[in-house]
Structures are given as structure tokens and as C-alpha cells.
Image (tube, rainbow, N blue to C red; front, side):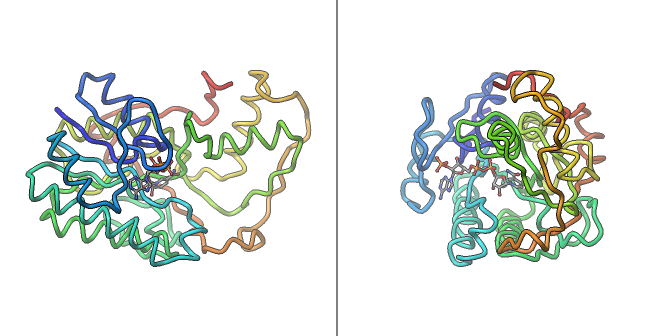
Amino acid sequence: MRVLVIGGSGLVGSHLVAEAAARGLTVTGTYRKFPTPGLVPLDLADAAAARQLLREVQPDWVVHAAGWTWVDGCEGDPARAERENCEQPVQLAQLCQELGCRFAYVSTTYVFDGQSGPYGETDQPNPINVYARSKWHAEQQIQSVLGGRALLPRVICVWGREAQGKNFVYQTLKSLREGRILRLPSDQIGNPTWAGDIAAWLVGLMELGESGVWNLAGDRENGTRVEWFCAIRDAARRLGLVPPGTEPGYQAVPTSELKQPALRPLHCGARIQRIQERLPRTPRSPADLTGWS
Ligand SMILES: NC(=O)c1ccc[n+]([C@@H]2O[C@H](COP(=O)([O-])OP(=O)(O)OC[C@H]3O[C@@H](n4cnc5c(N)ncnc54)[C@H](OP(=O)(O)O)[C@@H]3O)[C@@H](O)[C@H]2O)c1
């Protein structure tokens, strides 16, 4: 099976490239602004370049693990969010339809309003910020283009080693090393999800030829940011990754006090029964920092 991963230089995409290669698939990954050894350049804004790459690679599956993922940034530029998170992936889906290959689009449980999580795959989305609306529009339009054959993994609170070092584990380690107090939302709930679990499940779903929405997430669907921070902090202290100490290192405040430009859906956990029945797996604990430095 040949797989093309758009966004191979990102958090989810880099784990997917590694997992596909480890499982003996022929995989090509792309980067946009972050040159990465072994990956090829592609900006989806260049539709001709995308077409050329698909013709060269002739993939069985294309995975879109890309887009503009900065939630507060999207809030200030809805046109860009819609272009990069919806219009470009929809064009890619059209190309896949034309060339006869399968398509997966990595989406988010932020498509929900967060009033009544955790959510299953058949619950009705109701996005409350610009980023989430662009992802929900994309899901619907892609599924329409592909006649329901698109694979739509929804993920949440992703962590893992990544070259660009952006995710919550890096933020936590950095604040502890600098002796800062991190202000954390006391009321945001969801499953911390290791990117390696997403990759393993996603490759499995592609091998099975699956389609439709699948929640791919860790097993703590009611986890809070504070619990996640404490799990990282305690593991990091045990492993000597940060200075020892007894101070908490965080201050918990309601989301409303953080004055973030984009509204946050507060309870956005994902139920994972569906994937656990299809591809049983024990997700990595957010306290497992083996291999971090
Ligand atoms: N991380 C999370 O917690 C989370 C939660 C829910 C959903 N998701 C979804 O999961 C997907 C992957 O997220 P992530 O956290 O792995 O993102 P990420 O680390 O920000 O990586 C994004 C990737 O997309 C590439 N990219 C961005 N714009 C592009 C464009 N116009 N054309 C081609 N490539 C482009 C980036 O390339 P360069 O870096 O080289 O420019 C990078 O490889 C996204 O669709 C996101 O919406 C993520």
C-alpha cells in the first residue's frame, strides 16, 4: 500500500509517516515551511504542485494531517482558516476522487460545542469557533465529494515528540524548567492523546479500507488540563527532566479568565468504544514520558 501524508512535518503527520514505514508501507510525507529530511515540499495553496505530486506518487491513500491548527490565530482570520482547513483539503479530496485513491482528513472533537461531552461519532456537531467551523465544513464537503468514502478520524489534545516542539508536554516542561507558573483552564475536559496511538489506529483503518468518522483518542475522556499537567510534571520530576520540587507549578482558572480570542468547547472528550471494538489497543498514558529529554 502506498500512502501520501500531507503534513508529514507536523505532530500527527510525523508519527504517521514513522508508523507507516515501520509497518512496511511505502510512504511519502510532505512539509510546507519546516524542511524535514526525507520529506518532500508541498504547499496545498499550489494546486498544480499537489496534482503533480499525486501523479508521481500514485498513492492508494492520501492523508491530510495539515492545515492551520492555531485556534486563536484562526479566530482573527476566518478567511485564511476556511481556505487552509477546508477549501484546500476539499480540492485535495476532489483530486483523489479524480485519480481513484482513498482520502483521510484528520479532524477534531472541537466540531462539538462542548456542552455535553464526551462525544461519540454520531453526535451532532455544533462548532463554536472559527477553527472548528472550518474543520466541520471540511468534513461535510469532503464526504460529499467522495460519496461517503472519506475516512474522518477525529482527534483531541494530541501530544508526542515533534521536531517543532509545540504541544502541551513541551509547554509544561519549559515552564517547569523556567520556574514559571502556568495558568491552566480548570474547566476544559478531554482525552490527552498520544500521536503514536493515532498513527497506529489510522494505518490500521486504512489497511481495513474503512470510511466515515472515527474517534481516535486516549482513554481518559473526562481528563482535565490540570490532571494532565500534574501527570507530566510528576513523571518529569521522577525522570529528572525538570528540577525537583514540591510547588504545584500551575494556577487553575476558569477558561473565561484566560481571555483567549476563540471560544473553547469545554467538555470535548471523545468516546473511543468504536475504535476499541475494531482495533483494540491500550493507549499510551499521558504520564509515560519514556524517551523524552
Ligand atoms: N494537535 C492537536 O491537538 C489536534 C487536535 C485536534 C485536531 N487536530 C488536527 O490534526 C491535524 C494535524 O495536527 P497537528 O497538531 O499535527 O498539526 P501541526 O503540528 O501544526 O502540523 C501541521 C502540518 O501541516 C503542514 N501544513 C500546514 N499548512 C499546509 C499547507 N497549506 N499545505 C501543506 N502542508 C501544510 C505543516 O507543514 P510545516 O510545519 O512544514 O509548515 C505541518 O506539517 C490538523 O488537521 C489538526 O486540525 C490536531
